[in-house]
Length: 280
Image (cartoon, rainbow, N blue to C red; front, top):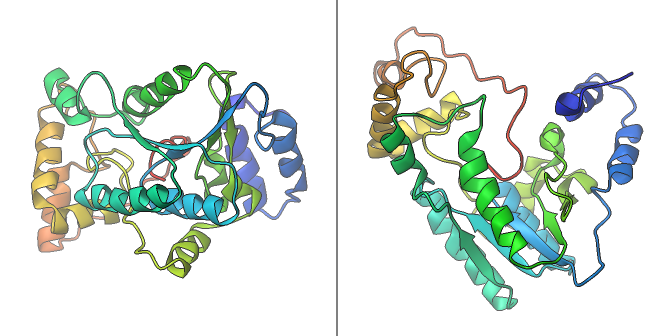
């Protein structure tokens, strides 16, 4: 059976859910090199940090198991919720005790919100330009400055295995310790709680088009100013109303959240989700 490269892990995930034997998938991971770190020529081990539950749990797990970790890198879009930026203080504190550097990188184009407002666009679920320009490009540019091979830890957990992807450049090897340990998101929460830290809020840009309805409602009720900024960004986009940040417009969602009318709000189904650089 042949699967296209783009949907390979989605097909693997569907087979696992249908009850197929999943051992061959584990073998395929090893064959493609995702579990085999490169240790030649002073290769570095770096955690690509997302600022959420999975990333923090993976950080604590790596430190607890004394895995090699040279640095932690966080790509800041300038559009995270305040809870995420507050959480970064805990991550810095943990790393400072271990003398491990924490580096923030960002796009040369300024914040993601300013770019969207200037260009009159919103992040696209199809082109993924925001992930490319504000997450992947700054991180990989930083990696190239070392001039050595990079083993990149990514915080994808077992129940979202379809998000696993190979590195886009040969000088970087993606490692998935949470997948190797078959650790789910609930396991990640347990790891954080056992270490005595507060569980981080869900990370990701507050105007991400992959926001679930429940996250939009959380933003509406707890950060009305950010919800309003996202709504204005959506409505001033040159592609509006054809392109929106949700199945319905944010104005319609706000009406639903405020009055609780009978608008049906189907959850977003993501067939080809972003990689581990976002929402981990």
